[in-house]
Length: 143
Length: 151
Image (cartoon, rainbow over all chains, first blue to last red; front, side, top):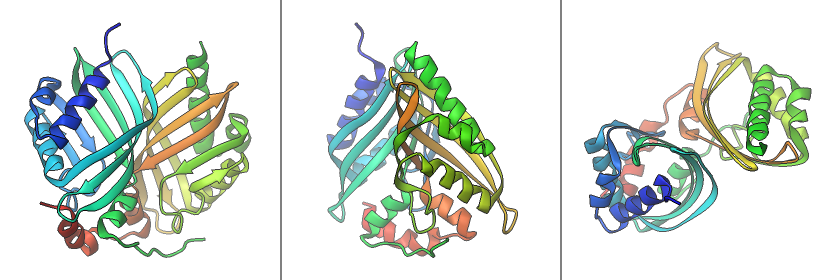
């Protein structure tokens, strides 16, 4: 049985971030890939939308410059023939501040001929910002 | 096939939820449904961690109280055995100022005997907070966050 594209992509992504070795990842990304991590790109440069392999490799480089992945757990995964949806829990460290960050992430990926052609990622960004700040953001209560 | 019926159950749930059909939405859920929507509960008291089917009625009532029009479009759905994941584009029209808040939501469901037993949801919560409050918070925090994160 052939290995699902998601597993190859996940290993290559981890290698690109933690070991700064993007060659495997580059081979697994479609030239016209669409990539969106929903969130405030003016706060975190690696959030937002990208189009094309070069732009996606660039954002992966930005991730490698900013965080290190310590651990990830797959909490829920659904695999289709050329698609995957997963809910993951990541333990990261922000490199400059050495601050730990714990995130749940929803990923929706689509592949074509074994290469990533679409990735959409959703994060509880309010929580991410509070963790990056190291302090809660106080909001008004709305009944 | 189990995954086909579970997929349809989730589609029925989402349709009923946004149509405000409490009975139909509750009928898709197990009595002991466990739900977590990862979002600040000060602003969204119907979200966070909830247990039991009464949450469905509470969530619909709070949304109806705040929003005059609630629309959704399922843009991606995947099902495998007892699990279903959906990505939904939502548009809610606020009653107090008529503005439309829009967001994309990721939802993961686990089902047993044709009913939803577990629900987990994510969205770009910082953006939705800004839309609900009606003002930009990014400037307030951007410098601090960049200082904490960037190389």
